[in-house]
Image (cartoon, rainbow, N blue to C red; front, side):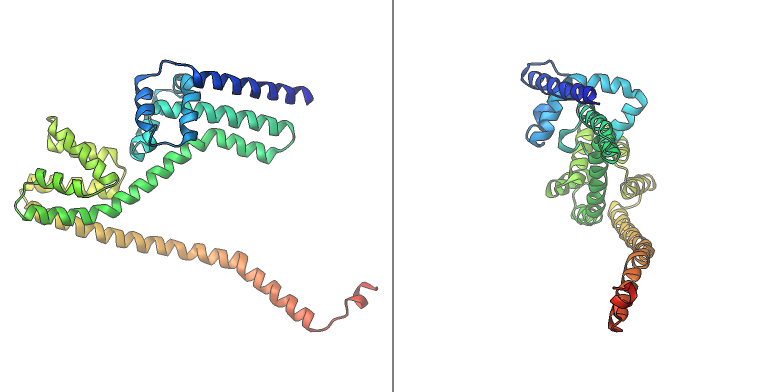
Length: 295
């Protein structure tokens, strides 16, 4: 046991000194990671920047161990999250290397001390901490886009009805908005400027966003274009359909919340209330506890 602890402590000290040396060294970075570090230096916290630089040498090895299929799946999730903090697949590999080493080493040390629960928590940290930030960013980004989209379509319909073409109106309204939806529209507009057809650009917009409302918007827009429907009527109809969908989703969430609240009340509040009432009634009877205990 003491030998294992001494070995773990020695590895920790060696890892710290090696990390400091890597942090100060002028290492050659992959182009993707180098760009992310340059752009993301002002967008990420100090901790993430240090972690990226400590793990950058091992990023390629982590990605190779993951395999091409899983790497593509992670890259897809990063795109859905909107590359939070300049995150790329290479930075993901760097963070997995650092968090995996720290969590794994800490878990082994705790396991050798008999702290199984703490060891399991550290192993879970090593395996899932990087994923937690991505999934949280995906959910937040999706909610922001779906809240913005109906109002955006109303404004876009007004601008189009004022006489601007759809392409110019889309550019004008996108400049007035901030957030992930505006960023997605600017990407789509830049693709169209580079010669990509409007249909293909909007198909890419739908692929980048795992949102039912975005898919509904793109599908209705393309169908209206094929059928020759007025673009203003199409935009207004899409916005109304999205608001009805939001109302249905809100009612569905409320219906799911009722059983959860009932379960909490039944399992926690009702027994606690019964115990409190029973104790109050028992104490109110003036029973002599000394006679019961024989003291």
